[in-house]
Length: 236
Ligand code: DC
Image (cartoon, rainbow, N blue to C red; front, side, top):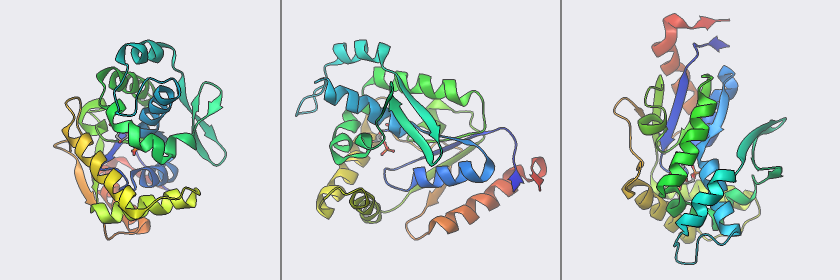
């Protein structure tokens, strides 16, 4: 295994580009902790939906949501088969991945107090270094000093197909056109929102994986890490 220094790796990019699968594998390979920032936005969204804080037209009851955030306990637990998202004692991993939550998450993520809540949690966890964090604004806003920043992209059709397979694998019946529409809608909202829009940090390296397998992406990152941190890393 290649040993690398204590760094923060930020993986940003469009939805369904495979950021989390890639980030999890990187974490496993280098013995880093994986943090899924989208899961926190999804957790806040589930909380808002369950408490009637967002309506059918995606209007948010900002005042009550802000009050709720003060006591909202979202956290990750490392379990034998991976990392799970919890709301208090309740595992919410399955619910937060549903299409219902995906449909409401962008407006919630565009609400500034929610971003502050998530950023604070991530920074508390990232201070220990040796973390791989995936999201939209990790390299540009949350950890601007991250030592390695990757920006992932792929064409929308490829991403919608991946997302559909993922949802079907979880037993959710969805049409390709609905998923494609959700992918495009999220791209638009995520890149046009006023607060912390999806943006490539100037020093991020672009990875377009439309035509790449996950193994090819791992070869790519190993070479990049060896090149960047080669003289600081140790081959075992
Ligand atoms: O990566 P994901 O699909 O689980 O993210 C869910 C939503 O959260 C996505 O629509 C955009 C938002 N998000 C964000 O705004 N900033 C982040 N750092 C991570 C996710």
